[in-house]
Length: 126
Image 1 (tube, rainbow, N blue to C red):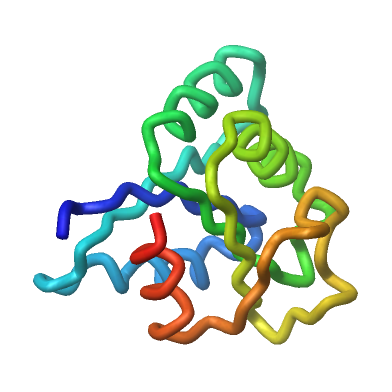
Image 2 (tube, one colour):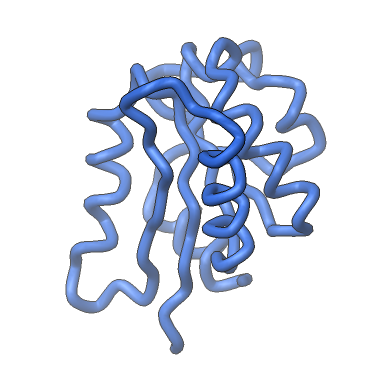
């Protein structure tokens, strides 16, 4: 199987959970890699252009749904961008989040618990 590129979007407050999540790709036999555009400073139009380019270059997008995602304007923009670019999207619940934590941008998008089987099934479908 060819390696799949997956863009991960998340609320910056969840950076540690994101690191654990993307750590899955470090296993030798994992046929995917993750990319993100984490920003340490306020983002601008140049950031959006670079981010859109990264999203276009990926096979799919995973949105990490936490209690912080609804207030994460950058992550919500990334989800909107992924939809505009026609990229397959998957929402993954992290940190005890539930349906009430899902932002409007993810309505109608499949959402799953953080399990290897669910992540692998999404990536295999890309």
